[in-house]
Length: 304
Ligand SMILES: [Zn+2]
Image 1 (cartoon, rainbow, N blue to C red):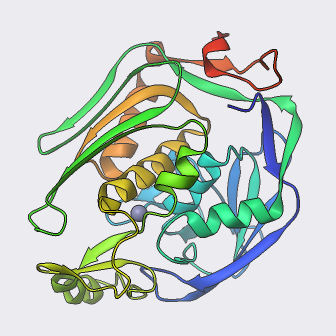
Image 2 (image 1 turned 90 degrees about the vertical axis):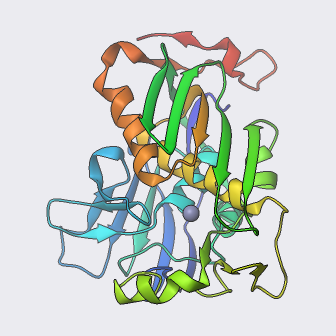
């Protein structure tokens, strides 16, 4: 893990429709100073009302995607895939400029955002990076869904899903995010949906932009997408991607082992709320550089 904060080196740009809104959105990532965090700036609303920090305190809806909003009731939907890419690439500070109400869906995964960050370049900043070091277990149990975290020297996720669909069925994956594992194994996993639920979602104003171009479509026994799946277990990988993005709303990387069963956006956020509600459960931790120039989480010294 990088010991210094980082931002993007130069502005980069992408565009596509939003998964739920169906609206074409232009997005650009811009450098931001140390301590700034990740903030969205909508350019299509009244001046001075468009800035929204991408953090837990600004989550206003998490039923189908993670939506952040501010006191002017300006919102941005589906931030989780971009947040996952920023987390996976170790970007602490950035301005996300948008001219619409939702992050572009791109291909439904985080890979296009990883590519965008690589295209921008990563600039290390003259400020130490902080991590959240968990000090005791935190558990959210919602019956069918549960998610917990326990103290660890590095961030890892163990995720299990179970769907009443032969295409998904049961899938489980454990992953430690070292050596590019996020970029290779998680970022390309796409979001997914069931064809027989699309009409109901669209009547409710969701999934208006969803298609096989930005999601895996499941129709009873089969995957509709002509090219099939990117991984046999692409579904659980995408759930891990969502979890990485949702947990990055904590505002810093978390040193903990996550164990999730059928968890989704709401439970992911509840886990962070439970952690922040108990101030004995975590502490800030600086990430000192290791001797070989690379920093290692095990070398962290708790300062909180
Ligand atoms: Zn997702």
